[in-house]
Length: 124
Image 1: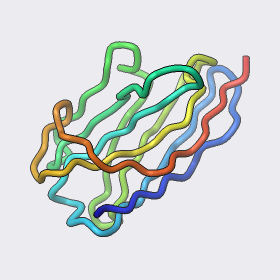
Image 2: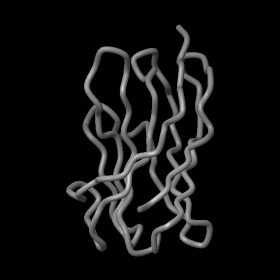
Image 3: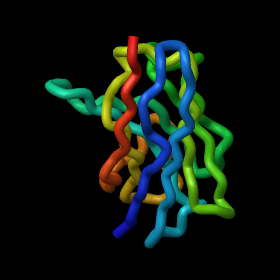
């Protein structure tokens, strides 16, 4: 079972930037795709970014593309989410996720394990 620990959340003004980190253990990290999700109060969990196991392919929904960047450092078992041009509607708990199976794609990995999340609050 993978363990995932996020960090880097906080309070930022509209237009600001944050970088989230997620350290993964209990898993052969380089062989797995990774993803970031978010959940705002009263809303469903939303997939915001994915990266395949090679690190060469990424996926973002239209609402995110151009503002967020997902990346990975296999030497550190860490996946990052660089967020810029933040808006109040980006306020949510952000969690990283790992799939059950190896060699997943950026968009369609079977995410099955999540970290506890880190709060991101964007003030207007």
